[in-house]
Image (cartoon, rainbow, N blue to C red; front, side, top):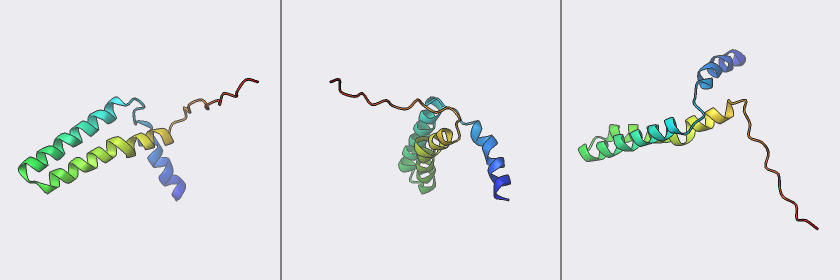
Length: 82
């Protein structure tokens, strides 16, 4: 059962972009919605803005990196020359 649920979530998560542009745009939209919510006094718009910022800054980029098969090369530590 759990395996089938994970298989269903892998396909949509594979569609997440690996470039920062869409995530930055989502965060900027979230800031705009939050500011608009503050200006007109709508708590729901402020909450939606905060959720959009959270999605664009943390959750979606994290999920894109976790589900990616492309891994960055390991960082080689430079050893002091003797």
